Length: 557
Image 1 (tube, one colour):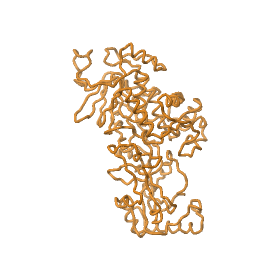
Image 2: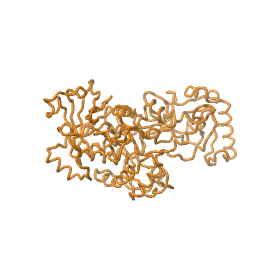
Image 3: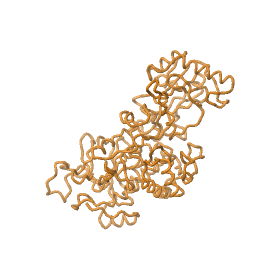
Image 4: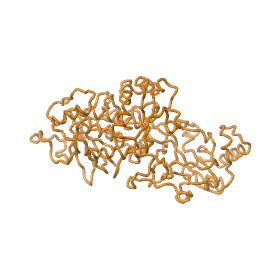
């Protein structure tokens, strides 16, 4: 199959070519039977005898990366697009429930220099250069699609003081932030409306995809999938784009690859279960950045109905944090990055052959319990994670924390007792054998003494925040590293093409978003996940649309 020369493609040139070729901008339709050009040929045993759906570009995963891929392929590329999504309705992934911030570099060379600085050689220079060049257009594309946004010199999380995680590195002053009004929820509503206007079809509740690969040319021709009770075959005439997200909710993969575990602090899209890892490995893809993640630390109650983390914040300062044995270990009022704050949980204790800070425990007394709602109020202006107000119940939306905290207490999410010894027994239901009652009692007594003195010589917590734990009963909940997403997935090149173990592109296979994020060593780009979706979604879609259909009867390049 001949690949046309890749160029910077404008919408006008793509649509002109599409008109000449008679291509349609509307969604794929269901078709039975093989392509007309192969009808009289014998079907190879590795190819489906019939195709249930056909399309030019197949997008697997309907989050932010899938959205940008689909819209670019249809609007600029004049291609038919079909999207597969695991969730039963809506889609959106983490992009629909995050803060809606995206990176806007103000200098291309400076941006590339910053990426190369924090990635420590683990992100190829060609990738950094390509990302920086395309990211310069993020504001242009946000405006093109009617997103209400403004450019800021800092992030919401940093109170608009910093626009990247490592402002001291070369090139950091090139990074700025685009902030979408209404956060990720509004981004998704606007962009999904454009998807519908373009006639791009989404199949929901699709699972167990398996890529279809030509064993001779190694081309990806489409995929099998489970849909509406049967196994279907989907032809992707030009390319398949994997935008399937991370593996935040796959315990086996997290335990195998992440630097810390258990990492239960992810509050995002629970359909991110790493299905794509198996899919790309089966066709010879190389994996990269599997040990990288974005996050801080958050509570998780290991509830089957709500498996994701739920962020808590006491309304008074009558609280401390302790490690697994009951020792206080930090200034609880110090700010911690929601992107790289998990690094402090990397400490490993050979004395217990484990991570002593996982889980960390928050301890409060009745004063803090009575002070107000500990968890998220979904009616608040800023609601992210699975309690975002526009999420439908069908995707597992969390309805919100009770105002008096009692429903969660009855559910067993909060451990409680009138005594420290009784509290430890409750905590050991979550983390057996680690918590020591004498150690925890000593930590509480020492902290209360600091409160009485108005000074914390152990961790320099501000004097005004030193409020004692002296009003039993006590309450506790576990905190785990995690937050936004994992980053690992298939290695890709500057065209967003997935690479095999020899760093050669697997023909017609692309990836974008947190399924093989290009960031490595650490996560340095604030707004980088949304920018990752925008950059590689657009780049990959443009490149894929230059391909001739594999069923056109010519040899592949």
